[in-house]
Length: 254
Image (cartoon, rainbow, N blue to C red):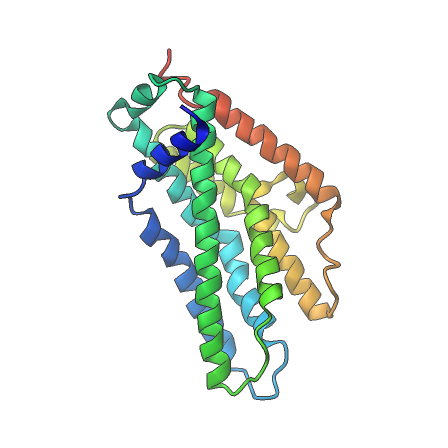
């Protein structure tokens, strides 16, 4: 069985789950509240309305709502294997535990990507309604929005690997959800310390905080530096993904 066939099986497993409705909840909540709260201050002469609305919506979303929804997705995907010893049936096939874990993580990345697509689409629609209602004639900054949404996706990958590793290590759903929540909550505090480089739960929020800094100081991308973030993020991502792969299904194989 090749990896693409395995991915197809994994997507079939979650096809009838509640993941798809779930990825709409956080974007709808955060965009509706963020755009509505800010748009009341708009005037026809207002400039940089789109970046202001984006930062207002994305700040809480990146620190909390996006990680929260991904925690639930991790538990749903992992739960498909723990029910009725499904993992033993999968491992009876000519595939390794590590490959199966990697396939599940690819499914997680897909749903992360889809949620950010939903966030972007909902934000664009809400933003167009807000700007047209208040008479703001500013052009939609498509490249700006795509750049920051892609940044959110990439900076969430180490966090997603951490969530998956904890979900694998602590098989009981309540325990894995609780631990992940406890690690997400202080993210906004850790982001203001030098320790943020080793704390993947704050990466995406830190990125939006940097965009806020650039917006208020009228600079261009100076707050978020790729070095030393990039090598640290790659190392954290690789370690956590390897940990999840080596521990996945280990208990059931004993």
